Amino acid sequence: MKIAILIYDGFTALDAIGPYEVLSCLPGAKVHFVSTEPGPKRAHTNFLSVMTDYALNDISDPEIILVPGGTKGTMVAAEDPRILSWLRKAHETSKWTTSVCTGSLILGAAGILKGLQATTHWYARDFLQKFGAQYLSERVVRQGKIITAAGVSSGIDMALQLAKEVSGPEMAKTIQLIIEYDPKPPFDSGSIAKAEPSIVQLANQAAQEAFK
Image (cartoon, rainbow, N blue to C red):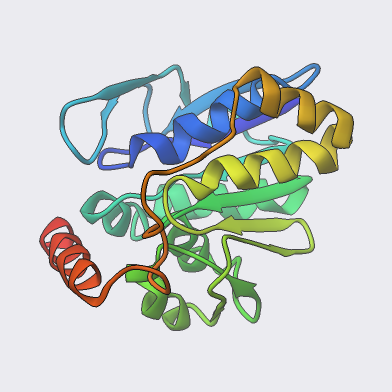
């Protein structure tokens, strides 16, 4: 099973690595980190790099496509004709096309989400409308073979759901146990609907700075 995870300068690390940990456990899976050209790509924090071994055209027919999000780097990637062209072509033959966080904006820029429901990071929800998609405030949204996940950590949820679709619930549950995904966060402020107004304001300010 050929899995392509798009990597670009400015991606958010957990958007890619969280789903990678799940999908790499699927039977027969071979994960390819792809970019416009092979080499290291910096995460949006500038503290971490991920090495990509494949150019986009090296992996033209993946069965699973995963597009992580980020901040400023995502907006640049969403305007890169090489990335958009590869996504359109790969999506034609993929079994599953997925995104995490603002990665849905790149799918949207490629025309893949037009007329569909989708999710993204809550801060970027208004951007989806520019690409003809309807934002849903859900952690994971499936539309046919397209699955979009909300902010950062929801990529793990999405990948486990995808694992169930690909290899069945028993395998998905086994992977969940292998990675010991049993979250019990110390605070109940993980969604914009639950967080206190003061926390929402602080998070909005941080997001605005990140996108400048």
